[in-house]
Amino acid sequence: MLEKFLVKTSFSSYEDFMTNYKVNVPDRFNFGYDVVDEWARTNPDKKALLWTNEAGEHIQFTFGDIKRESDKTAAYFQSLGIGRGDMVMLILKRRYQFWFSIIALHKLGAVTIPATHLLTAKDIVYRCKSADIKAIVAAGDEEVLMHVNTARPDCPSLQHCISIGPNVPEGWDDFTKGCEEAAPFQRPEVANENDDISLMYFTSGTTGEPKMVAHDFTYPLGHIITGAFWHNLHEDSLHFTLADTGWGKAVWGKLYGQWLAGANVFVYDFEKFKPVDVLHKIHDYRITSFCAPPTVFRFLIREDLTKFDISCLEHCAIAGEALNPSVYDEWYKLTGLRLMEGFGQTETTLTVATYPWLEPKPGSMGKKGPAYDIDLLTSDGRWAEDGEQGEIVIHTDKGKPLGLFKEYYRDEAQTKRVYHDGLYHTGDIAWRDEDGYFWFIGRKDDVIKSSGYRIGPFEVESALMTHPAVVECAITGVPDEIRGQVVKATIVLAENYKDKAGEDLIKEIQDHVKRTTAPYKYPRVVEFVDELPKTISGKIRRVEIRNKK
Image (cartoon, rainbow, N blue to C red; front, top):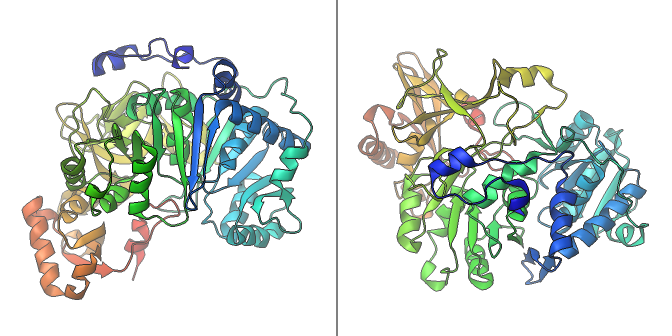
């Protein structure tokens, strides 16, 4: 499949990759027809999706199956009047109907809005009103259905609520019945143009109301790099990305790049994360490639890995938050596998990563890839030199790079705030070393200015995470009359340290940070908490900690 879109599919070095990586973008590209249906035509029995759940059920879907089921789903959606440009929200957890639905919506030229099951009724109303959502397809769980029902009277655009079961309440459409009874699918004469909106995410930002990040139909091609050259997948790979389908990470790791590379996508449908269950899945199903946030690896290294045969793993990638070097070192010691870090946003595809030809530097995001022309812009408007902090920006003066978002939907002012002067401004601060590796500092709004120093939360958090008492932490700045701001650490303690919370432990942790990083970065204020405030996608809400009285 890669041969269909890439000028060159294999590379001998990072330099070769940077120089010769080129994507051919077809007119009216549609992932449903040009990838899923093409696999079904050329190799219908090729494995596409291996779905499992906590009850021990498992179903292996081929590309022939995915084509058949997505066509039935598209036919059902057609019968409801859903077509090109219509907005449809999917609240489907990790149910396999998510894959049928998103491919069906692509085939119709409709807009998919993936959403997490953690949304409240208020969240659903906000989304429906902001995007004029026409239909919601939801997992048939009582809590999800309840929130949608509560929101429904305040959502005038919402015409259809569809449940995949097992519960199908009164007033809801039955997804399974609808797909079985629908007339044969009629492919639209023109499903889409390349710059039509195909996918939209409401970003659960750490500040303000969620923004609507709109991607066009070419966006999946931007994930060729994600699947083939970061996850390092091939046609015999079984890839497991740990993410709910409501998160942007799901299409990063459970759909586009993986199927473009011809890999089999592994899905574990669970309600509560248990590290030991993940290890069992890797062991039992012989997963070859695994991607998860650093938090997951922090839990995995606390398990007894000698009880599991995970020698099947060929490759591990990490994203979603910055990686603490201590986690990298421990995972490598236990497994012999390097964690290959990557960086991107809901607005982008993979922008910086540790590619297969690169030796990881623990704590670094890696180097820039060929898809984006990236620079670092200092606060006074200069291009940052090596070792100097700056905002990560992407050059757009020669056009929008493949994979970069189209716009913040219905928010021209916010779009112009990030797209201006031939640049896309990510809002993320980093520095670059002399070898071209990028090192994450923090969000622009999170950088702490203390006594003339600029302190990034991540570098202090990395130092804290090497102390055995610290399970999770967040660094913020608090006002100080003398220094402007001082560093505050909000810490979740390990179970065996909770009864030691007090001044002696605070002093011990402060001294540990002084020894581990520059002394001026140590937290002058330390608070112990039971949990950290987070967005629905798991990001720490530092703004909530800062605003806490």
